[in-house]
Length: 475
Ligand code: ADP
Ligand code: G6P
Image (tube, rainbow, N blue to C red; front, side, top):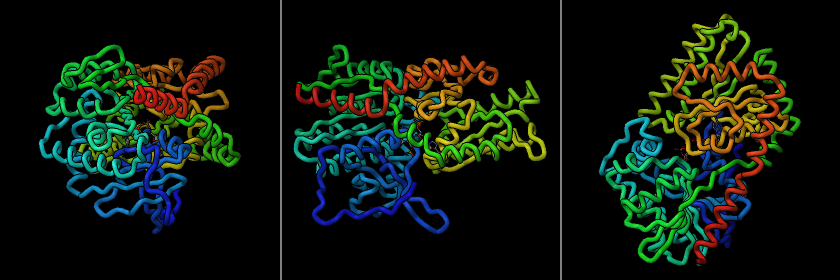
């Protein structure tokens, strides 16, 4: 949903007691039919933190996603946005390079070979310094700063040097790799020391927290006792805080009459009497979209009639498309969809309905409500919010979730059909099982899944992290 950004009124404050600091602002400039507007950015980080910072009346510091010159601080849908500029070269070396060519693949189990380039590292240091500088200018004395994700792992210690009065939290949205994998990083010591500048370091799972604590001992020269890491007279809590979604917000959207009408319309135009399978992902090689398509093709080969009885709706929003691996993936997925429809479809019947763009929340929720089976099959994923959004949207108690064992969400969503996303036949079996599932079992599983998302909402997640931060920094 896009709106025009408002300039701050004169006299409006330029320091905030809660600052969210992330690589990008939670909005992107989008040009459609000749009109440019801000739209909500896709991705778990933006989705999770937007309601938190809005409710707290805080500000968000981040890059706009565009090159060079930047607007001054502005408000968008109740959030003060403080843009940080990046040059073309910094975008290439810090964001596409060190962020998405080194840390992203390394942290996702090296499913693509991470590249180690010294100029990328230098750009990463320089941009982290700029973020720390910007935060230092905008935080109120004794204020709280919450730094997000792998792009900004040096900011906690760079900021502490400038502003020792602040409470500093850090949260990693992606997995944290096993010791020996992380040990490959030429700048492992600096990265570990960087995050240890925080009072609390949050990770998605206990395994990730353990990995980080062990590395703090091995490369950061720290002492570790339980979830406490001690270094140079300071202490940092390193613990798991599994992120979640705005359950109430999604349930509200799911109950809107116009969303119900949209579901009915989609049932007529897309479903047409067929069972609907759904995938919703950023076009990222960690999401397992290609193997999912293979599993669906396997199913259609096993049972030809499924081609007329089912439809797979795959929504994939392009992401990081200046990075070669992402362009390659997009080409591969495009080609696979074409082949699958060509080989298994018929005149007027396409088994895969492929949408390659950003959808607004109401459209996404309508699709969740349409889907008999939701396929969330990443090869590695810190949490995966799509899985939780699907469950939150199913206030009708229907629908089956097929979920990768390698998504952080699998630890909480135990009543999903859990799959190994590398096992194409196993995934095809799970889809068959979901399609044949008796209604009472479907309802029972969904009831348990809904219980799990209600127990831990994104508001609970933020409250528990911020509570730890308050008590850690006053200890
Ligand atoms: P990641 O953070 O790696 O992208 P998550 O599943 O945790 O993965 O979060 C993805 C977020 O982006 C979800 O909130 C989802 O609704 C949103 N999203 C994904 N694809 C789209 C799309 N095509 N249009 C709009 N939002 C999307
Ligand atoms: C994941 C990362 C976020 C990132 C998002 C979208 O969720 O953990 O840090 O913002 O993907 O990626 P992008 O590169 O478009 O910001």
